Image (cartoon, rainbow, N blue to C red; front, side, top):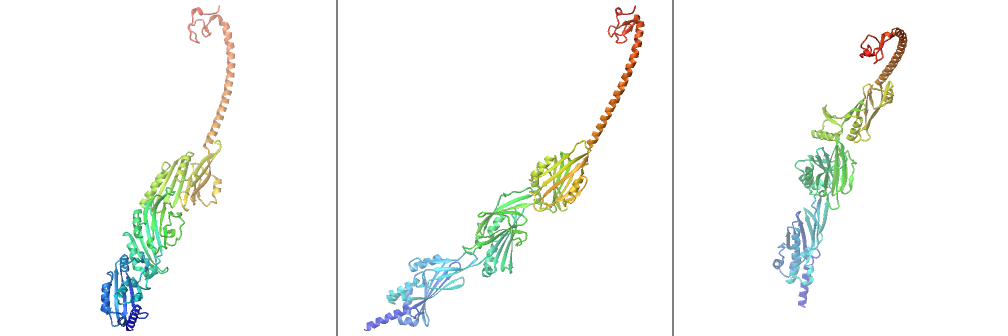
Length: 637
C-alpha cells in the first residue's frame, strides 16, 4: 500500500512538471526570442523557466543534478546557462548563426532532420520590413532535454510531451519586434512608392546631347527611408553632372534632379548606367533613317531604360516619362510596340520640352531620332529676265541671328552638296546674322531644272514667252513663276519676291488691275513687281508690252521698197523716152548717110572683117582695126 502511494506521488510530481507554468505552473515555460540582423546574422535564445517550489516538489533531483544533466546532454550547437533565483530555476539556451544557411545546418543537427527557414527581404531601397517563417518550434530544439529527463529517470516517459511548453515567441528584425506563435511566422513587408522618373533630352547638330533625369519621390517614402534613398541616388551621379534636391510641397514630394551637358552617345551611355545602377541601361548611336533636306540634319540613338532598381516588388512597374526638345521633329520607336510618332504633349511640364513617351515599365528599348532644322527667318527671291534664254535668279536664305560656328559650317556643306551642278553659293555675314545666297543663271530650262532639283519641287516652274506679230507696233510678253519651297520649310516663313523683266518691257494695265486688291503685292513699276508670300509658295503672273523695234525696220523696208519701186518706174519712163529719142535720131541719120553713099559709092571700099564702108585710100579699118588688103579694095567705077 505504501509503495502504491509513493508511486502515485511520484507520478503527480512528474505530471506537475510537464505542465507549463502558464497553465498550472507545473511545466517548464519556454520564452523564445529570435533576433535577425540586416545581414542575416542572428541569435535564437530559448529561456526555460520553472518555479522553484514546483521544482522542489516534483523534480527528482537537485539543481546541481539538472545542471549536470544539461551539461552532459546539450548539443554543441547550443550554448547554455542554468541559473537559480529566489523563485525560479532558469535554463537559457543560445543558438548563434552568421547566415541563414548556418542557422539551417545547426537546426538540422539538433533536431536530426532538415527544416525550412524562409526569409524575404528585398534588395531594393523601396522595401522595408521582412517576411520570415520557420517550420519548427523551440520545443523541438529542446527535445533532447525532455529525452534526458526521462532517460535519467527525472520524469516519467508517459509525460514526456508535457515537460516543456512554449509560452511566448518573439521575432526581432531591424529593431522591430513581432510576437508570433510557437512556429515563427512574420510578414511585415511594406512596399514604398517611388513616383515618376522624367528623362529630358536636348540634341545638338554635332551629335551631342543635354540630358536631365528627374526623380519624383513621395514625401512619405522619404520620411521612411530618406537617408538610404539619398545615398543611393547620389551614389549614381556621374562626376561631370550637377545635382540638386528640392521639395515640392504642392505635390507632397521630394525632387532630385541630375543635369548633364553636351554628352556624346558614349558619355550618355556611361551616365545612364550609373544613374540607374544598371548594366542593362545603354545608349548607342545609330543611323537616321527618315527623309531630310539640305536645311536639316538628322541624328539618332538607341537607348535602353532600365528602371528595375526603382521598383519595390515583382508586380510593380516604374512610371517613366520621356521628354525631347519641343523645337525639333522627333520620332520614337519602342522595340516592343513599334513606332510612336511625334505626338507630343505635356508642354507645360518643362519649358522647351514635349513628352513623347509615358508608360509604366520595368525596362524599355527606344530608338530616338531627331531632325535638327536650320530654317531661315526669311527668304528673298530676285528673278531677272534678260531675254528668252537668259534668266538670272538669286535666292537669299536670311538668318537674323548667328548659329554656332560648327552649325553654320554644317549648313553650308549641306547646301553646297545640294546645289552642286545647278547653282553657285555665296556666304555673307550681316547685322549679327548671315545670308546664304543661291545664284542660278542660264536658260529658263536650266533654271527650272536646277530649282526643282535643289528644292525637291518638281512642280515648280518659270515661264516666259512673247506673243504677237513682229509687224505690229507692240509686242506682248507673258511672265509666270511658281516656286514651291514647302518641302524645305516649316511654318510661315516670309518670302520676299521680286521679278525684273527685260529692258523696255512695261507691265500692262491688266496686270495692274489684277493685283490692285492683292494683299501680297508690295510694289509694282513699269518693268518690275515686288510681292510678299507666306506659306512657302510663290505665284506670280505678269503681262507686259514692249515697243517693237522690228516694226520700224519693217516700215523702213516698206518705204525703201516703195522708193525703189518709184525710182524704177521713173527710170523706166526715162529710159523709154530716151529710147524714143534715139530712134528718131537714128532714122534721120540713116537717110543722110545713104544719100552720101550713093553719091560717093565709086570712091569707097568695104572692110572684109566688119563690113564697114571705108575711104578708098585707108589701109586699116577705122572700125575694127583690121589691116586692109590692097587686093580687097573695092571702089566705085
